Amino acid sequence: MAGIVVVFDFDKTIIDLDSDNWVVDELGATDLFNQLLPTMPWNSVMDKMMKELHAQGKTIADIEEVLKRAPIIPRVVPAIKEAHALGCDLRVVSDANIFYIETILKHLGIMECFSEINSNPGYVDEEGKLRIQPYHDFHTSSHGCSLCPPNMCKGLIIERIQASLAMEGKKRMIYLGDGAGDFCPILKLKKEDFVMPRKDFPVWKLINENRELVKAEIHGWKDGEEYEHILLQIIKTITMEENQLLSVDCKFQTIPIEALPKAVPVPY
Ligand SMILES: [Mg+2]
Ligand SMILES: [Zn+2]
Picture (cartoon, rainbow, N blue to C red):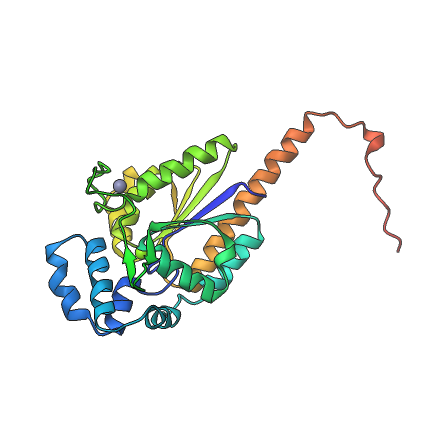
């Protein structure tokens, strides 16, 4: 059963906070971060913050240590493991960065559950400094989407995934997210898809104000228990629907009655 693709945002959808803020706050650089934020795009601020932390003597090991103790939304790790065990194709689409996401997913032991991580490049340079680059190089061209930040349009990533899925045959998507940046990709979902927005977070408000624009079926969640329950329920529902379709297909091949196993009488 590989007919379902589950796309997860990362910050506040897998971990229970924003990874950029967490690292900056835990390493004591909040004031500088707040000063820089009005002057350049968020993604560029993060690259600058990593340079600054390196200059202050903070190491990659310090950053990893902070990442590894980031709080995770309860029940999300078991939900991810179960969705993977049920044969779903899991992917991350996040405006954090590859370094943070891989560090945390490996630490949680769920890195292998994902077939793809789409995020801003993050790598350690030759000086041992973490560099964070934009997913979309906005210095050379614009991605052209007015809903999204200059470094990443998640909607374009979803369209690319949809195009590749179309080549593999019919697939259905479940999208989970919390932020304003998740609204654009949600608009790309089709009516047979599902969206699981985090209740009372920015994407929830955007969806509720623009219901007519969302074609996918909406299932909000407020905590990890609901998240796990709803996600697994949707997967089971899709699987049952697909199995029913399969059995309908089978009926077209006429099976002679004699070939079917006879009902065995129950002895009293
Ligand atoms: Mg998020
Ligand atoms: Zn967009």
